Image (cartoon, rainbow, N blue to C red; front, side):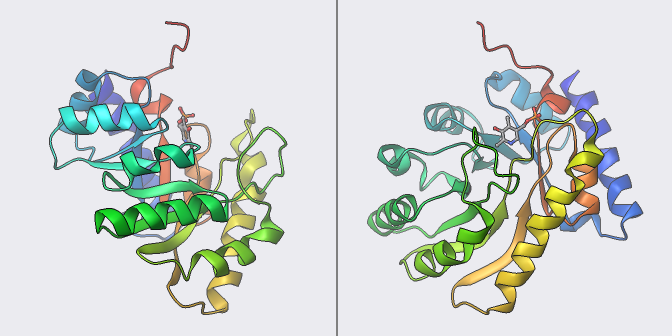
Length: 230
Ligand SMILES: *Cc1c(COP(=O)(O)O)cnc(C)c1O
């Protein structure tokens, strides 16, 4: 089932790229495997998945140890500072940086472990109270302060769009994140590149691609519903 789902999502990613005049290589499909067993990750891997997203440090570390080192891991969930040390050398990209204190901790641990950490700034575009992420108006200040930290590289922006019935409702959210990235890019801040736009999940990844996403994070569409009760 996972392999078939993965191929279906991959096809829709390709079609969305085609529709919007983009190259397939411009968009990374991240298979969000949180709560799912390694057996399912292997199925996705066999279908062609290479990049996996997790939102819990411990789970990411366990799967990292158990699965082939050829897989690439992204930390997409809220990250506590005391757990940074466990993921900084395992996640090739941390999507969820929303404070200077967190960026400082990532930098500190990256220096200690002699690795280069790549991060995205998480933006709460829709300003939902329940969400993590910085408000759009505060992004530039955070970017400027984080940009000077050693062994840390800002690659772009990430957002979690609201849960909506109709994906079209999130189009303005994606447009706004893109606009924000363009505005920051124009400021030419040293050590900041705004090439990554991580936006779009199972319900709205095609709209996100049409609006410029370079990474989409798809969980349910590939692995099925998550059951948090067990
Ligand atoms: C769980 C999660 C996803 C995937 O959500 P689906 O709707 O299952 O595709 C994407 N991004 C983040 C940050 C998540 O926590």
